[in-house]
Length: 185
Length: 97
Ligand SMILES: [Zn+2]
Image (cartoon, rainbow over all chains, first blue to last red; front, side, top):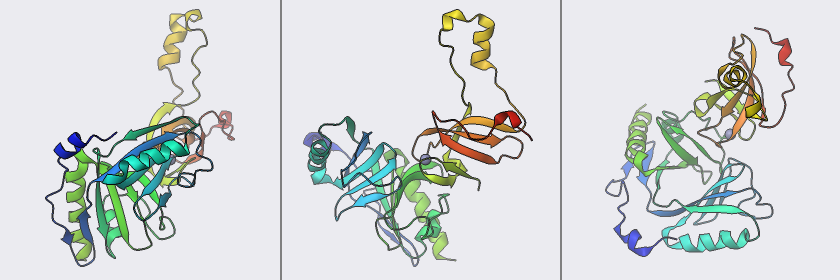
């Protein structure tokens, strides 16, 4: 459980970074977020979790990305972390699962614009075309030398990059670099 | 880039994967019953063929799952991938380069 006294002391990485808005691709850091790593064998019938690997369930404020056969990355606004935890505990009450708070471990960066996919492909080997990575896709992959979770929450060319906080400076710098070269082509 | 067909995620770029060496190596059921020679071979001696080879792979930067693959060590072509615990449909005794 997230304790308020720890929350107050925590300094989020990249907080001082201003948005980088370029002609064809822009990079924003996203505000602090509650995130959980869920491991479970059986989620049948749970609407928010029971979808194919590589896809994400989305609501206005929350997401549940299925990273593997038994692994999910869950996210909610920082103030909703406890609610999300309670929701999962209720939905999976009679089954075995592990739910770990990783809010402090992850940092989210958003890259958007017509050349966003091109910029990501400077370091991400995935096929980001409409057919291979449509709206609602989410997966763990690589960005340069860092492991990330890449999600596409909507049909717009907007991508969410989740990385570990120790990779945040690298991933953020990489995306800005890639966004600038994609913009001036 | 070489694509590897993860049994869970589908075709994904090679850099997301790591190889874990030869697959289907059974640990002796009773290690106390095998002599040093046989135990040493179980631990260290591998086939290293020129041709079809059953290997363990992990989709490290993806679903994080181990699975098995039949790969031609000569051409680096992935002939088949299948989940751990399953058997390949390819007959490895007919391995060719
Ligand atoms: Zn996979």
